[in-house]
Image (cartoon, rainbow, N blue to C red):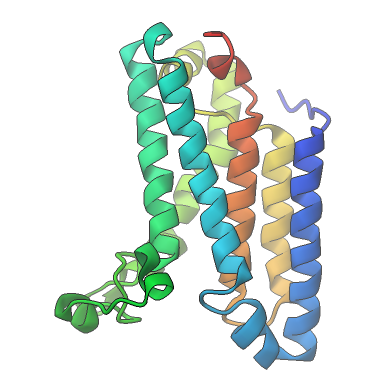
Length: 226
């Protein structure tokens, strides 16, 4: 059940990339925190755009699979694949505020008054005194990730009904190496003493999810229709 497979070349490249990003992040955050926050991990910087690129790549990959296997897959498979394509498209758009700063357009009055950063996105919205971003990433996302990265892989291997349902909706199941990598890169955040370190964590999440969608444990759900 806990058999660990050898990472693919693509996974090794992804982990090496994250290791470099983290090494630089740890160095800058401990030697020049101003540079770390205002240059290295700043808004509209390399880290943020790289995260958006990873999320957009997953969305494009999912749309491609949907089109390619449209005539040879059942309805539930199409629903699941379309759902992931839209979820990661939304995530990529939110990451860069739907291109607001890229194209330099102003937020509407609603977002100016109700968004913590006065930007056109939902994850920085404030409802009452609750920041949506804090609610999602400090509570909901932690629960979702725990279920997806730890509980689902165990149930997938032990419960036939869960396995069949997961495959029916084309849900990629993580390899244990991917779960371990995410845990390691999460722990390493403790060595970046800055409030901007979540930006680095978001990139790690984007890269690892990209690797999961390329090489899931149940990869046959994307190849059995060739």
